[in-house]
Amino acid sequence: MNLFCFSYAGGSAQSYFGLKQALSGPKAILLELPGRGMRFREPLLTSMEAVLDEYERQMQPQLERAEPFAFFGHSMGALVAHLLTLRFAARGLPGPSHLFLSGKSGPGCAPATTPKHLLTQSEFRAYLEILGGCPRVVLADEELMQHFCRVVRADFEVLETCDERADARHVIPLTAFAGDEDAITPDLVRGWHKVAAAGWDVHVLRGGHFFLQSHWPGIARIIERALATPRLTAAQPTA
Image 1 (cartoon, rainbow, N blue to C red):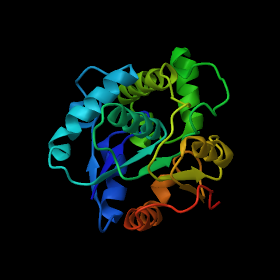
Image 2 (cartoon, helix red, strand yellow; image 1 turned 45 degrees about the horizontal axis):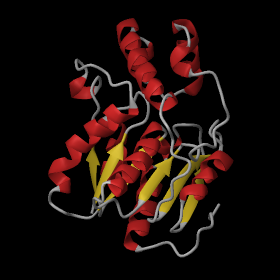
Image 3 (cartoon, rainbow, N blue to C red; image 1 turned 60 degrees about the vertical axis):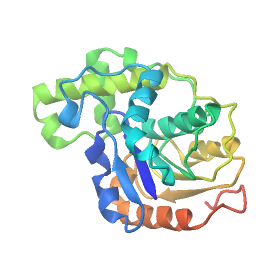
């Protein structure tokens, strides 16, 4: 079983290295968008369609093998997983057997706010410091920080200018993860039940927006158990 992993805003493939190490059954496939990691010199993407196209291109070699797969995404990555699943379904293509969605409010559930990608540079940097998740080495290096801000701003433009497809329904199980101290509250994450037509559950873990970094072994066990169970039996949250 392949587990395709989609990064959060500002993240890279290495953001999920802890998950890759913790999984003992499924194989984590760590995907990389332009502008980060080994692709840091490539132009950033600023639309969801371009992001979905790029991820689909990277996944093609594995998809052609017709092996079973699932999707995992945190924050922006969760929305990518949701929309890419809908894209596959619309094309009549085989889709994931399970969606694992972390740190993201259900489609259409987030309260309206000022678009973050339109903030001034000083406002944007202040917001990122409040959000957390920025490596100390980046905070301490002005050149790295400027590049990181460009990456995150582009990702926020992707998030804030796309249709989240709140009208859609998934016919595969969904498992959601939330941080008990995250601004994206567990109640907002529970909004995924509105698009879950084949069962879902939610796990609330200790921490803020990047709670997953402290819980990789536990998250890996949840993923393994879910993939060993063909279908959730009840469309009700567990927490």
